[in-house]
Image 1 (cartoon, rainbow, N blue to C red):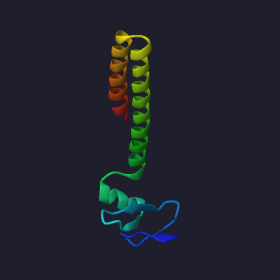
Image 2 (image 1 turned 90 degrees about the horizontal axis):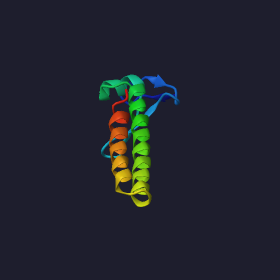
Image 3 (image 1 turned 90 degrees about the vertical axis):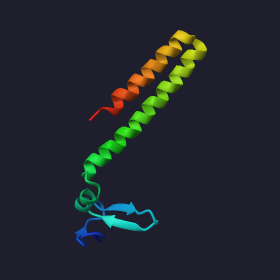
Length: 96
């Protein structure tokens, strides 16, 4: 068991969130205090973080495929790859 730095409540180590401040100071927060400080609950925060990682990987893959298309298939396929990359970015970043 650890204590929350904000409300001093005892919480399990598995549920504790470690926050590093701007000055390098580490704080332990419970999920309720995290929501009070950030305005969003932790599950939504974690989902958005994972969604951002998946979007980055999808866009990097599309950029690689676009470069391959330019080199191997020509300008028309490369332009199609650019359009596809833009569409993947727009639709994946809008997912909720």
